[in-house]
Length: 188
Image (cartoon, rainbow, N blue to C red; front, side, top):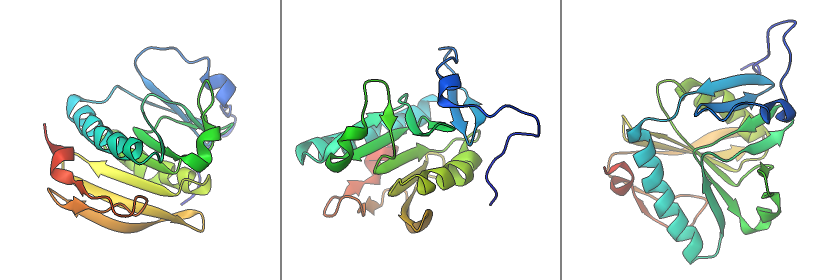
């Protein structure tokens, strides 16, 4: 798939432009220099995010594996790629990427929770950008279908490892030995 490009004659936006955007409750991201804007997530989206983040944070903290963050947090992958993933994990080896203002570089894991307004961007545009910039694992969660897709980066693209639905038990490749009861993620 071709990279998103601004229309001819349009300005390519950078992180410096991003810093000038208003704090108005909208979610701004710059992908390949193009502005993407979405409204705040709906409660169902937020509940799934909180449930997963709680489980992930508890596991990562108990095993001293690194840091877990949730949106809004700026992940600056390049001057023209600034994202706000729903949840990220940064392993101990990459903790130097956490700065006072943002995460500068690829997290080990990015989690995006799909909504009708973001699904295509998360699946196509962001997936390509994340893989190209060194994100190792990418999880897509669909609250409506109660489905989790687990991807791993191979040669700069993501390959689907697993797809789980409903109350399945998920064994994340990034965390060998850990089990996630997806029923707890969808609860609420």
